[in-house]
Length: 232
Image (cartoon, rainbow, N blue to C red; front, side, top):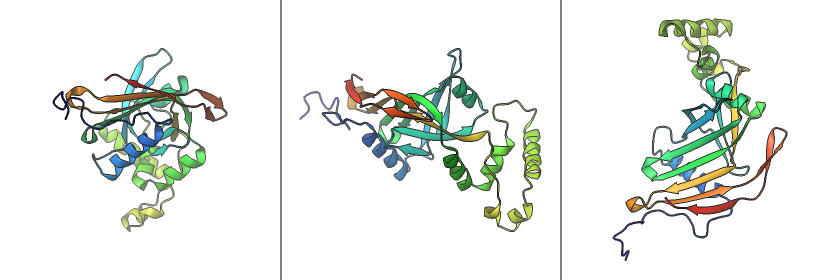
């Protein structure tokens, strides 16, 4: 029996902590996805900063959780604010939070472009409307009205020589829309990972892992993880 009346009870991290946090992190990510705990269980907050250190944050979707390399991939417009900031200051912080599961993952680390062939393959798997949208929006740039945006979408469809008859005839899946050069993936390499799970009385369980990363071309070589438990 808990002499504190249940304070501190709830899910907890293993003791001792595992050498690599990505085993637990991947299990949590897959659990949230498989149980469909929210409309977009792969949603995560992405925080970036410009060359002056001014921060910005937004929600993006994690499209690949790579436990082997300890990295995650999301896709976006390279000319967007986040894209421009990542070019100037290629580091990011991520937060995945699932209220329904009382779990949270925080990741920080350097960012590189995902391989072009990986971006090509993912782009080709998207619905035609989303592929057209990637060409149609000059993301983060001003536009005078919603009507002007829709007109721009129509103009880009013409420029791409999209056969509207295939859409009308129900053969939209046959449309060939290549990936724009300004659109693709970013890989966030985990330099730190923090895992959090809720406890009664806000006596939560937290642990932090760190490792050293060494740049190797478009990738990073990683040293061993070190870990420590944190007070909530």
